Image (cartoon, rainbow, N blue to C red):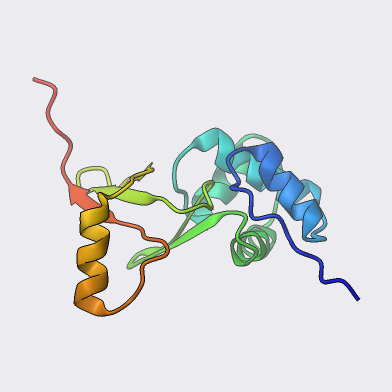
Amino acid sequence: MQKQTISTKPIRSLEDALERCQTLGMRVSRQRHYILELLWKAKEHLSARDIYDRLNLEGKEIGHTSVYQNLEALSSAGIIESIERCDGRLYGNISDSHSHVNCLDTNQILDVHLELPLEIIRYVEEKTGVRITDYSVNFYGYRVSQD
C-alpha cells in the first residue's frame, strides 16, 4: 500500500486555501467559503467576533457556533493562522512561516516575511544545541509619526 502525501505548497491565496481544503477532504461549505474569502479580503488578523460581525454586515448570515467551528477546523488543518493573545485568538490568512510586527498603538498584527542572516541562526543553534529548521520573530513597536 502506497502512502499518500499531502502537498506542503504554501497557501498564499484564497484559491490555494480552497484547494488545500479539498486535498485534505474537508467539505467547502458555504460558511467555510465565506470565512476564507473574508480573511483573504481583509488582509488583517481578525477575532472570531470580528469575522461573525463582518459576514453578517455583508448579508452573509452565519451563526456564532458555525464561525467558531469553521475557524477551529481551518486552523487545526493549517489552512489559516491562529494567534493566541491575552484578549483572545486572532485568525489570519497566511499559514506558511512568517514573522509578525505587533503595533502597540493600534493593536494590529502585521505579517512580514523575513530571512534572518545565517550568522544569527548559527548563533542560536550554538547557544541552544538545537538545529533550527524554521523560525518566526515577533517585533513590537509604535507607529512612526508621519510629521
